[in-house]
Image 1 (cartoon, helix red, strand yellow):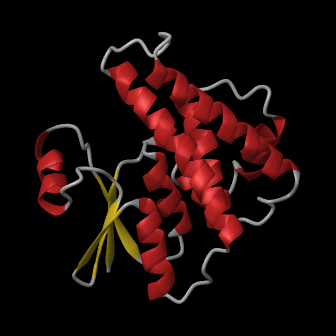
Image 2 (cartoon, rainbow, N blue to C red):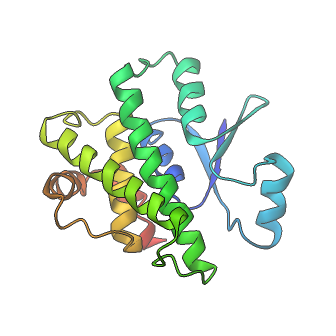
Length: 192
């Protein structure tokens, strides 16, 4: 059995939980910043990051690598280069927003006019704008792994109130169109 380690609020974990909805696995919800869960994570993953999986003796780190591992293991179709680029865009925005959220939670004022903060905001604005354009041109019309990742990102932005999406109608429409999928509602971080 596959064991997926993560938290209910991580967008990187949630994308896998949604994608693995029809795959036999156990989800192990960790509170990764304190206590025994932190030790559990440290004993299995030297990066101290989630998600990770254990599968038949293998321990695999990072959502993108886990996706590739399971795709190969179960002989699922590999993503196209266009889809790989979509995933890179989604990951870039997610990574920048995670960094800014952690800084905010560390009581560092990310609104300051500092290069690091400006670069993160610029990356988020640029990638979300491009993703909005891709939605408008139909690039995410199929409910596949890139679409799941995009939904996870948008929903996490809304959940954490990390960015104003009002000028990105394509992303908001995409979110609304997919919000009632069973794997979406079953993994909603607001419920757990």
